[in-house]
Image (cartoon, rainbow, N blue to C red):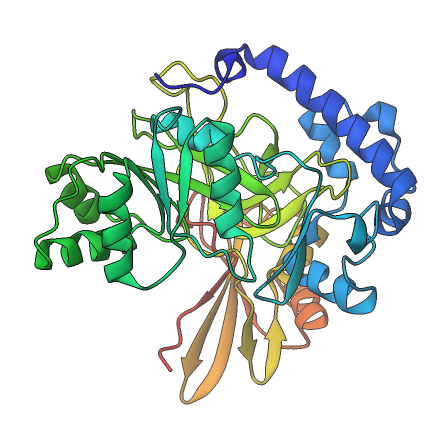
Length: 409
């Protein structure tokens, strides 16, 4: 088992105590050092943040919120504790979202843990095919590789023939990049009759690693594992050689929340991945990634004790347009909360060429559940009329959907 440090196998009690202390320190510092958090966390009692249940006192920050905040107060929307000139590097990701690299540590996004899990370390030469241009992906992997003692070739994206020659000349032993681009390089090498015998390990991210593709690499003697992260929060979780889910990074708090809310889902239920980081200069507190996943039961067979995610299971932002009006998951969640409902789903269909919607509610209506009243709340929240229907216990699929648009066109 290739671990970065002993924290990966510590007790859950020790980990939780450390994470809660980091949360209290981060919230206290953010309240004092940043404009945004000074306002949004003003009423939060830092000393009362002792368990994961206490996270409910903190607002969720969505990517759409971040974009709007940065437009109002460029470049960082009041979330940073210093100005742009004091940052190490500056990036602009799609959105557009301004993203800084803070401090001078090479592993600013913490991807070294994912690299070590696939066996990359001192003596390796990492061929890095993440882009170094505009967005931070290239630097995210570059810094992590240097942190574990590996040398790096900054291949970036494109120029496949040059990539082949660089791999051959430097004897690259490992690849970092999107799952499919290594296959493109290897097939080009085959066409050029160039042998790349040293390439044995790969850490991939930024797209799906399909089983057939993993098998293709395995037949060529290349071990491939995935990492899950974003430019906003860095590494979230990583695959181990057990290949049974993704183990959550040691330096973040991950929650799975019902889309459109700040409420945790039941154990094993699919919901939105929400991440808290502890960067003293640019913290992300309850940042909603927009990705769906679920927590897997038990621990990783490798002995790592942190929670595991089942991987990427879709997008949480299920906003759709009905009769010319946008309907958001947050609106559906407010209807459910107003009437104390459990799991619900707004199903959008087309009937006779016109949009129609029905709110499907698990369970059976109780004495307090007036279907007409729920329909009235739905109408007020969405400014659209819809049917309300109770469908029995555990009737909705466990896929994280709050809005299901079944229209075909």
